[in-house]
Structures are given as C-alpha cells and as structure tokens.
Amino acid sequence: MVSRSRLVEVLGGFSSARVVLYGDLVLDRFILGTPKRISREAPVIILRYEDEHNIPGGAGNALANLAALGVTVRVVGAVGDDEPGAVLLGLLEKLGIDTSTVVRVPGFRTPMKVRLLGGGACSLKHQMARYDVEDHLPADAPFRQQLHDHLEATTAGAGALAVSDYGYGTVEPEAVAAVCEAAGRTGWVCLDSRYRLGELRGVDGATPNLGELEDWAGRTLTGDGDVASAAEALRAWLGARFILATRGNRGMTLVEEGRGAVHIPVWGGDQVADVTGAGDTVIAVLTAALAAGARPHEAAVLANYGGGIVVMKLGTATVSREELRTAVLSDPGLGS
Image 1 (spheres, one colour):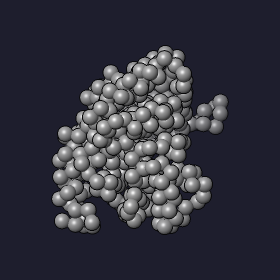
Image 2 (cartoon, rainbow, N blue to C red):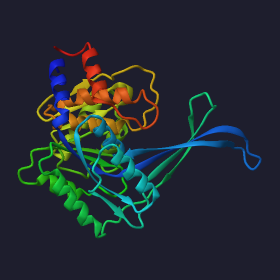
Image 3 (cartoon, rainbow, N blue to C red):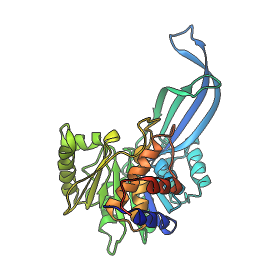
Image 4 (tube, rainbow, N blue to C red):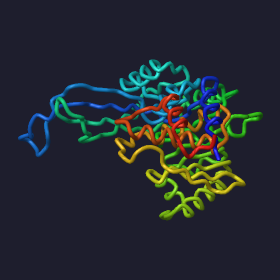
C-alpha cells in the first residue's frame, strides 16, 4: 500500500526536481462573447465580442502544470514565426520557463485551438464552436538538428523527460531513442502520445487514455482485466517499465514489469466540469513525482489526484503542489 507519509515526502522533493518537456506546443485561445441575436444571414447566434484569453495548450499545458508544481522545468519544442507563436512564448516566460530552447520556425503555423464561448453577462460562458489551426513540422529541415542538440543538452542530469506528442511533428522516434540509449542516463523517460503510441519504443513509461490503448490493441477493452492485459502487452512491446492507463471515471490502471496490475479508483467528485488537458496534468504530475524519487505506483497515485482535481476546473487548467498535498492528507484509502 502507498503511504501518506511517503507521498508527502515526494511532494517535498518537487522543489529540487528537474524535468524536461519535449513535445508539440499549442496555443489555446478562448474568445468570449454575449449572445446578441440570430443572424439574418444564417441560422447562427451572433456574439458580441467581450474578451480574449490565451493559455498554453498541448505540451504547453503540461509545461504550465510542471511550473505550477514548483519543479525546475526546461522545454524543447518549436513554434512558428507568427503571432500565436510569440504569444505562446510570452505566456511560458511569464510562468518562469526558459524558452531559449524553443525553436522558431519560419513558415510554420503555430498550432492553435480557438474556442468560441458564449453566455450572459452574469453567467458562465459555454463553448459554442471551435476551430483548429494545424500544421506539421517538416521532417528534413535544418532546425531539426537544433532540436536534437537542445534535447541532448537539457536532458543531461535531468530527473525525468516528459514526451508530449500531439502529432504536429516535433517529436521524432529517433530523438527519443537517442535519449533512452544515452550512456549513463539515470532519469525517467515518460510518453504521452496521441497517435504514435507504439512507435516510440524504449521509454520507461507511457500514459495512454482508454481510447488510445484500445486503438493500439485493436479492440474494445471491457473490464479491469482486459485493460490490464492490453496495458501489459503494450508495456512489453515498448520495452517499458510501466504503463499507466487513464480510464476517465473508472480511474487508472497501472502495470509494472514483474508486478501485478493495480487499479486506482477515480479521485474527486462526480461533477466533472471540463476534461480539457487532463492528460497533460497526468503526465506532468507523474514525471515530477518520478524526478523527485517516487516509485511508479506512488507517482501514479499522485497523478490520479492531479487528474481528478483538474477536471473540476473549467478550461485548460493546472494543479498545484498544495492541492496535491490536500488530496494526500484527505484520502482515507492511504496507509500511514
């Protein structure tokens, strides 16, 4: 059983932990308005523009979570030489994140998810529509060597590397393999990949959600045993030390090399506000905990708290170390 005192000890180690985030940086843009009337041009609601909020998304959201947890974090990624890229870099710098190892790529459109939210002046805004600006980084461009050099330099001596692959081309299997095979590497390499779960082999752990695990397994997974079996098959395929499968309101399933599966109940209430970016929070808390000296089971329990807390918040959100500590102290299922 995971003990309360041990988890508090791990949280205390966050301030001295070093984590590198390698992945696809995205800008989440929220445009807020008040419904005015139905358009005469088409059967759509016209919003009166009120405000605009920009938040780091994708791997940027995982970065924001790492910064909120108080770990020392570095980032290796790319943005376009455009307005969304400049905004995103500015947001990360305000969080105290060094962006000198983020490459600005001319002609590349920074991935951006634009959400239109409408509601009354004194009510919550609800998402009405969304459009995505998507581009894919070219595989054979000069900036690739810059990314490789940054990755090699930043991971030296780091406690953990979080790989956040959203499919926009930043993450390369060859680069991940080189880090995993680096002589003398002692840190953890953990993977969160939306579309290439089975291609990034050699990592220490991965955090697929249920849909991603089902896509890899090629079948619908029903019940704890089925999920555990697929997770163990994925672990063996990747050559990983563990797989942490996230299952929404069914909690999480952890499989470790040489150990039986552990099913972790969902944390928090059943009034979910927004699941946006929950996976980013999970990979952030997991890698922060591993970098702070946690074992996979301990890190998984803390990541489960993080995911449960963040889905109770609206929009792209983060979780703090103090919120995790409160969860640890209030969980009756922990040992002393």
